[in-house]
Image 1 (cartoon, rainbow, N blue to C red):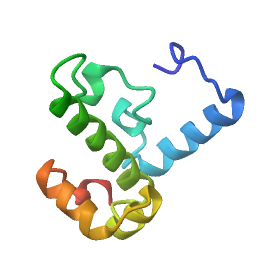
Image 2 (spheres, one colour):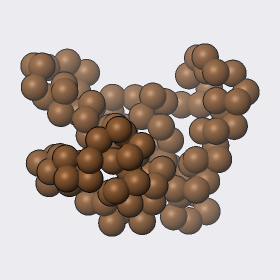
Image 3 (cartoon, rainbow, N blue to C red):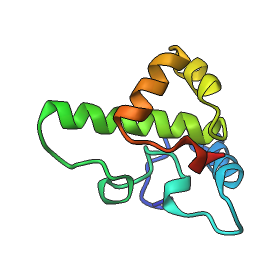
Image 4 (tube, rainbow, N blue to C red):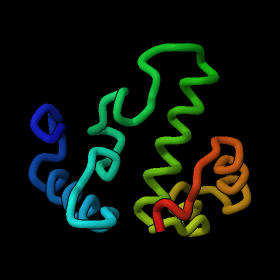
Length: 105
């Protein structure tokens, strides 16, 4: 995954990606789901390759929210601030998309 990504941000983007993965990884191994969604293939991230608009938007929302939760270690209020919205809206989306924020704590 790291080799196939085009790295538009060059070394700084790679460095940030690795630092983030180390922070969100639970143990000594970095798995693909610890990496940002931009690096993940559709199969790894659970994002459908095609489909109707509603499902594609839901998959994109899921990626944004899970990435924010990973960055904030499961803190919903901080994730909402990072996404420029309210904790209430993020909580609603978390329930709707069946995301478990405790997974990222």
